[in-house]
Length: 306
Image (cartoon, rainbow, N blue to C red; front, top):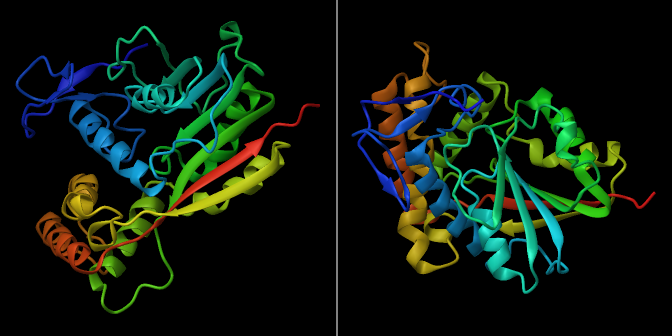
């Protein structure tokens, strides 16, 4: 069932490509805002598209290591508007069958090449879809803020069920919290406190990237490989033209947390929303000055033939 849509009066209206709010305010999807820690609305899709373009810079525009054979079936879990699938098709010389799932269909693009469906990946895929052992590649990216830590084993199980024998799964997450933060980065140290606090407070696991290989191994996957890419923000962005906007993109991603700060504040960071926004402003300046370089992780594995 599609989620009900309600406007947020506190935000301004937006147009995102051919997606637009029907009122003067962007629309929030009731039923998904309670699942995703980050926003999940028509304003957010613009940020996700900019994030998609930025993430590609870390991997030299590649979305997967190698081209897929003609007729390959690809599933994108947490597909949002289908941007990743369309980009994959544009990069692949052979025709692909593109399918995606997300919690709500309001973001879905009406593209004839896309088959996008509503599905909660914490639950098994419907049997009447006949997706068991169907996909040559199953992809999922940056759902660390959308899946509770305790839910990951079930999610991996449901995804593995639809990978065909000999097919691959590719899970993309990031090592956001770095062990070697120098004193030149005091705001980054506070950022790590925010990341740990937000994840633990809402049941997420910000370190899930380091557990995916064991989860895949438990499902019987083989040839597990983890590729790591520098994902520089601000001063350390790969392309000079991204150095300003990438720092601002990061802060934009986390400004909504101000609405979730309890009366006790975020320990070591801010006592209230005003202090939190001041911290983010300082973080942007610091990123532009010295950078922030988490590691993007591609965790890939092959489902055995038998």
